[in-house]
Length: 398
Image (cartoon, rainbow, N blue to C red):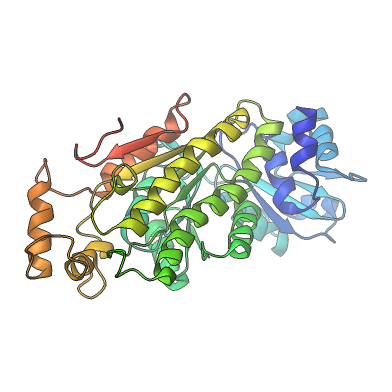
């Protein structure tokens, strides 16, 4: 355990400190720890004016020292609201993001804090306030999955390259749940620096990441002659390489928290595809990227299991109602018609009819189907390295 701690907590920065603090707190199963800054604030002054109770850690040169000092006064930790770490600033904790932000407002404004009469209603649901991030969460599967997970108790981060849409989704979630626990963040999964900044921002805002849903992806169809190398590389960059980078950075706070809380489990879940289970005509770029994703899931899961990080993939069938399929200009019905994927098709509508004719349940995959598979992956504590089909019986793992 000591070696694990030393390996992953070298940088003395808020994004590494917060998960360690989170591992000390037992006020609830999935507390939120927010880095508030306020490095110049006097703890005694804050306590007098806000009624919030604080702890003060001086001369701590490492995250391990912070953890050890908090462990010595564990009972006081659960009675406190924040800790001031010398040279860094104040970390505030609560049962929800909304409550933590209210405490920070009181600290900044020097006003009395009034504890909510009741907990945020989402905290009593299946996902118990877990901190869940969804890449590609501003539209399609990602958006609907984020809404469903939030409705089942997740404190949700919508990460997307389209920040305006992501913010709109977060606002909609907050209105529907009655809590201000969802936030949006910009992320381009083809850029490692953006992914690093995204994960550090999430940890500073929430204290950790319990579930990372790597959902962002694109699809391009075409024969060997039709596909350009540029398009092939772009599909691979987002669907395959992007998942690798997301897993790399999301696993860091998960490792830190587990090293300070041995009972802590977390999840990295890739939205893969039935195209990751079987190759399809004129779809080499997409199928190759998704087959590769399952290879990453199987390999990374072996590496991370010692930290109780479960790594799985869900493999949806076709979501015909989503923009990936239904967009009248860029949707797959149009792309597949142009790529001659359906023999004899004379229009995108013919392509649509053919695909529906193949469906055993006479419908396509829906976001709720995928969300149920994701919730299974999260709630169970025995499966890792799996590719879970959600394809209506069309594809199975052999």
